[in-house]
Length: 246
Image 1 (tube, rainbow, N blue to C red):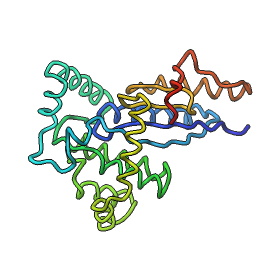
Image 2 (image 1 turned 90 degrees about the vertical axis):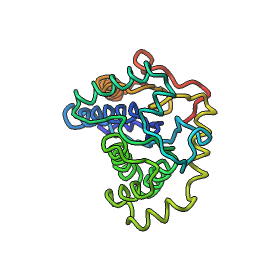
Image 3 (image 1 turned 45 degrees about the vertical axis):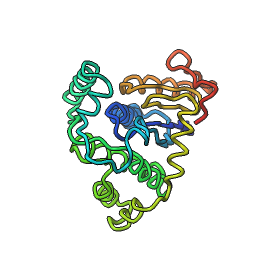
């Protein structure tokens, strides 16, 4: 039996811990469904940019830099930030993935440009390792996601381009207009928070869902495919609002 292709459009921001969590849970679910359950599914994945902090609030090369804890505590309020920090720390301890709010906060346009470049050069096979590396250096190692040297090291690490080539790319304005347009388009469609995972352009899951949620959805899609039944996930995940076309 031919495999069913599942198209996943993931909208996220590379400074967002919940986006890193959502990506980790999604990839765990995909691996489990393919390797353990042997579901007849193939996944086409594209990650689209979103900026939680716009360019007026946080210019690209602002100085002096501000620590993440200080910035987000002021932005969310001390109590709300403390709850977020506790929730993320709990997940990190359970999964053995040391996410934290260490380091400085930066605007994410350059990181999104590098992610987009990776997709255009090698599709999801290149974009996903790029995203994983950016999440790791920023949210685990506390490095500055807006630092050209940090991002060029990521590009060289994953084999996207040499460090010198990456520096030249990041110092240019290549793909900047495209990333800005994509971020503006997403907000214009009513999306105000991430992560958001759109399945086949029909159903949308918001927030950092657990791998169990994704596994349930993928099993449903595989079952419908095997039965040659028109897919419907209405009981598992809400449909994409008509204004949101990803």
